Length: 127
Image (cartoon, rainbow, N blue to C red; front, side, top):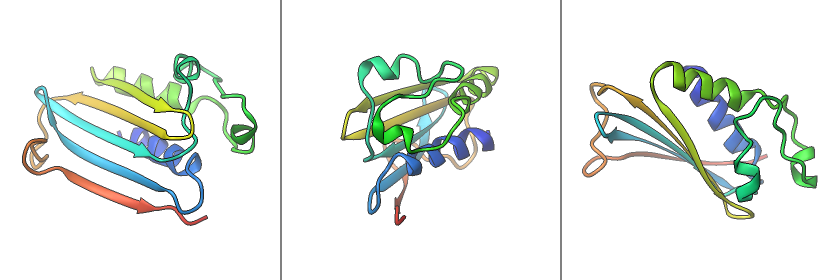
């Protein structure tokens, strides 16, 4: 699971410009734990979101071409999450940012209940 979180957080940082913010939340949800990673980066269109978990998927606009990657990271992330009987999903809007949700079954001791004790971390990106 470490690889999952590192990949999603690194992507959020890469696709968020200087001075942008990345948020991380973790909470209990539906007999499991959900991790939510949000950014205020360049975002994606509906069409682009449909292929981001495919092997070698690289979104092809001018801003994204400057960012290095193989197009395998999110494919591997999805495979790991699925192997643990979890789910991964994304919400995004162009020029507004993206939010990735990773849900895993089973309660983890110490994970806060979403209604009462969200754990939220904001990271200020300075490139």
